[in-house]
Image 1 (cartoon, helix red, strand yellow):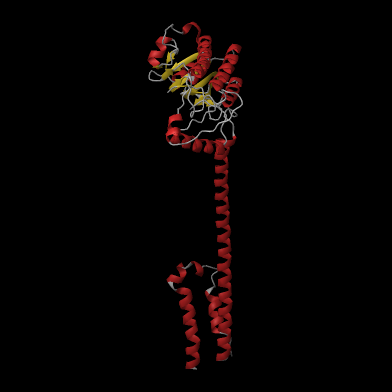
Image 2 (cartoon, rainbow, N blue to C red):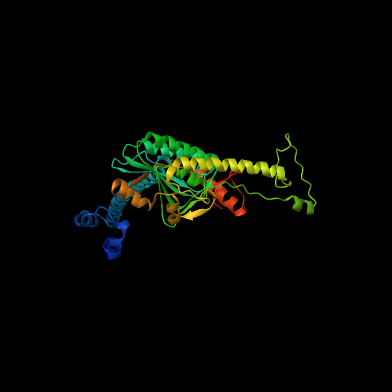
Amino acid sequence: MSNDEGRFESPRRRLDAQTDTPNDREDRWARGPEVKKGEREEALAGMPGDTGETLRERQRLAQIEMMDRWIGGVLTEQRRSRRWKLFFRLLMLALVLALVGYVFYRAFVAEPGSGAPAKRHLALVEVHGVIASDAPANAERIIAGLDRAWEADSAAAVVLHIDSPGGSPVQSQRVYAEIMRLREQGDKPIIAVIEDIGASGAYYIASAADEIVASPASLVGSIGVIYAGFGFQEAISDLGVERRVMTAGENKAFLDPFQPLNEEIAAFWQGVLNQTHEQFINDVRAGRGDRLVESDELFSGLIWSGEQAIELGLIDELGNLEQVARAQVDEAAWQDYTPRLDPFERLTRRFTGAAAELLGIETTRSPLRFQAR
């Protein structure tokens, strides 16, 4: 009997040790439906008349049953925990995707001005960088922004926000013509605000505005036309390189840098420059009117500070964008109406522009430039 009792008590002690130790109570795998003490004692005590073998079998079955209940509870708790974890992870993923989608929409899809504020504001159109057909500051994009800004009912004024050294004569003339067309309608004022620089083709555009505002240190003017090239004919001769060019028309390749530019061709090309310069001068006079001060140097291609430019009548007021906004709508409130660039196109432009600048390559298609040097 003592051997039977020893064999009976040993599993009980092991069971008590498994269920009552502090470490196991803290173990998450031990969490589950608690087996009532009475049920456990009843299973371990057995029934009257049970032999030792029967008691051992009854104990083994009771332990298996309790273990099954414990494992079932643990599995249920694990499933519940996994469901909550999955729910919160999906919720977090949905929030992140919604945020990314909103940022992408605002940055690349939503057109500026599509959600124009109802309160009075300045309708901004950006003219930044070189003006060229293959640059962000191209006529098509600027004109689209101008038209959108002009049609905004809550816009107190259209503002050309300029920070550009100039560029293509044709692109500048197209924007100039559109501004003059809108200006003649007289619906709202068009104001050019010059930041660091508004020179050459950029000033060409600004001269069509009703009013030009610049900071005292802004660079303004450079009313002229430029063509720049190189002559490599002697260099290739020294290197023993033969240049082969075939044309239909004897002067078709007159700007070829590997051929000499004779006096007759130089005079012809100078005539083209002079005619383009005259177009520039006439349009500036038409835009600025009698505000210009007559001076021999005014159209010589010189560039002035904003403080000097106001004395020559090239600008109307010294100030900045914030001051213009407060004067028009009593607060610094404006909305950008410039059409957004395609994100891939923007990346390509930056890469090619940086590469061209590094190599010293001109990217504009026209050999003539309204651009400060």
